[in-house]
Image (cartoon, rainbow, N blue to C red; front, side, top):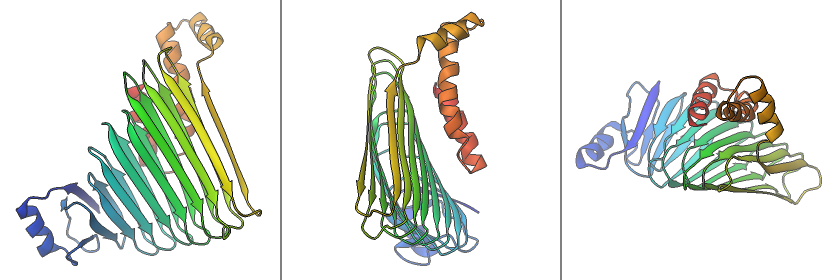
Length: 289
């Protein structure tokens, strides 16, 4: 079952929501009705699985044991909160095609998994925070970007281990072209109550042109000794030796550069578990490099 939730604050849309929604301030996906409009800030409850598409700020709650796929296409500044019940399986794809201020906060309960994958093709200010609140909660976050022209992207990820025996990893990979700029920030915080946490933060950028600039600043804040947490970061240019080797095999310089960039993204995209999201991400990255 698929649900599309977009911003439509006209009187007709508001009246329709009041008539068709089980709760005056919320939208439930349980049942046969398909909701096509949602007012700003609406609460959405997924009780028995489904797929929703968001183009405006919202708060989404996924019931215990449910699976959900959430597509977010920010076309203006927006904020999204996702609350999982216990033992949920939630897959989120974010596609940013215009400059926006965007914030996502995941609250993850016991035994639940959230996989968040995002692509950013323009500048903007992006914040993604995942809070592992229940024992055995898990999150996997992968952020990809290709910024060009005079775009300016600020991407910040936060992972908080609040409960015992939680797992999480954050990966950011991107390319900066022309005179664009990208600033990556990341934080893993293990609280005193987060014994047994496992986490990894990785940020890697390729700078393609002399006028482009990038920075990567991962941080760890560990308040419990019984954890396994690490990070890595790199900002680099393409090795000219690699380009020369490919050109000696018949490629021109631009094709050689694209082949290297595709390989840089490819290994990370293959790690996306959801086959549908993996295919869409490969298409987004491939059309942008």
